Image 1 (cartoon, rainbow, N blue to C red):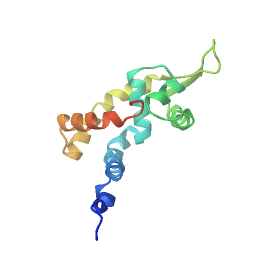
Image 2 (image 1 turned 180 degrees about the vertical axis):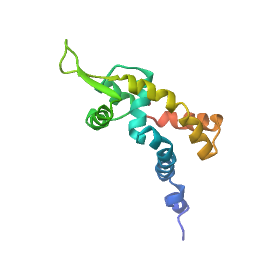
Image 3 (image 1 turned 120 degrees about the vertical axis):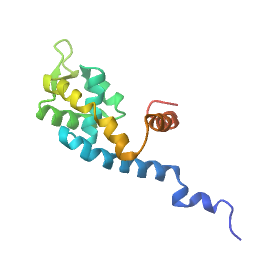
Amino acid sequence: MTDPRDDLLKLDNQLCFAIVTAARRIVTVYRPILEPLGLTHPQYLVMLALWEASPRSLSELATALALEPATASPLVKRLEAQGLVLRERRAEDERRLDITLTEEGRALRTRALDVPGEVMKATGLSPADLAEIRDVLAPFSFGES
């Protein structure tokens, strides 16, 4: 006799598998779009956060990206090596590391304005489709309950 719950254990029926697979595919879509900007997908996310607010402490940046500071730090160091950001200790609190955009980092934003459109073109998704996917996933995002 077959257990009626057997279908629930099929790989194709797993939410986690669908999300992980979709995430990998989306990052693959971004790769050639970001390459001319000299950014990897994780670096692009850091730049997006900094274009929204700069300077930010490393801790604030990591929180915004749902990363541990130890994971965000190497990304920031690589962006600094590319001349896109500066890492500076605060004079009043040397424990705090502020991340600031350079002129080159701010200028890159203009070139990045085409990225969302290119992603939509590559995926065939409209702005409404993207908003719907984002809104469905929002309750599962970092910091949400």
